[in-house]
Length: 356
Ligand code: FAD
Image (cartoon, rainbow, N blue to C red; front, top):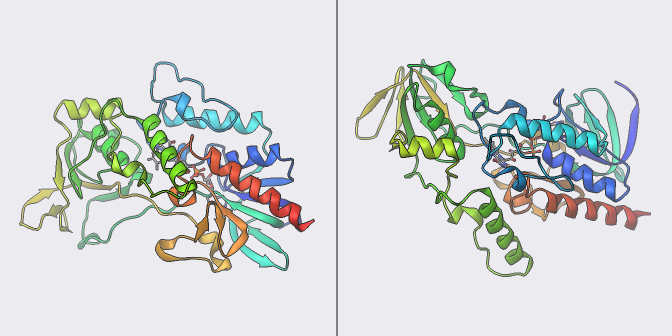
């Protein structure tokens, strides 16, 4: 462990959100560093399954300053393409990312914040937390989950259909991950796709572009003090990217309602119907990875921290970026994180100005 070092701003997390923050901090001429737990660039995209496709074309999946290049032969880029883009992005803007460095705790330390890591201690006037959600998979409490003897995994651990050929697989979840993984498995496995409510496919001509427009309209409404339009949830849940559309049109994506329990080797519905299963894949979402902020004592309902824009209400030196709509409409998307990143950097600069 080296001695304590100082930066005006410490950004925690070097995925797309941390890089977008870095881009704007650089433009404002601030002294900052980015601490990232991964050994390589690319954030969560490094761990995505092979067939994952973005729900927007490349041109609508860009961070500030640098359009994502088109991926040859793919209208909707894959995760490896995003990793390449993020790697090039941090190099192009010469962003000071230190890795692998895991932040273990953020503490108040007089007028500064102290950022403790597994290899160093930093003191900073301001902290931007951009640690994403991938690192905190959520699994619902379904009776019998511990009794099931087959394989259970979460979206975050799924790699591809090759691991399940000819097996009886239950996929749980009616969002984009559930639909894409069900489509991936539909050809080579005996698939049961289970969703809490009937799947809501967006019209085929609507993709991430339209979702972003809706999020932008929502942001405008909020900015102008008008009624919250509710964001993208009102449109549907599943973007019909080509592999999902193909499996759906082939009649392979029929969903069943959620089962009630699991036992040793099957899932069981409330009416007694059963389906034998070798594996259950929980595509049931993620929660914000905020444990490093616990020493600040800011945690509110649902594990979130109260924010105004990206700023923590009870700790103005802390900003939260990229966790979901509660940290800025569409902030948990490639194209959507740019604006809240700009706002966060601007507020940090104003705070530093006020303190000098
Ligand atoms: P991450 O990519 O998770 O990056 C956070 C970084 O912080 C990681 O490198 C992590 O190692 C690091 N970190 C975490 N904790 C610490 C710590 N304590 N100390 C130091 N470093 C830490 N968005 C789109 O725009 N289009 C899509 O098509 C799309 N598809 C998605 C599909 C799936 C299955 C999922 C889950 C999300 C998708 N998203 C999509 C949403 C979003 O773009 C991604 O979740 C994206 O990875 C979020 O970026 P991030 O930088 O906020 O977080």
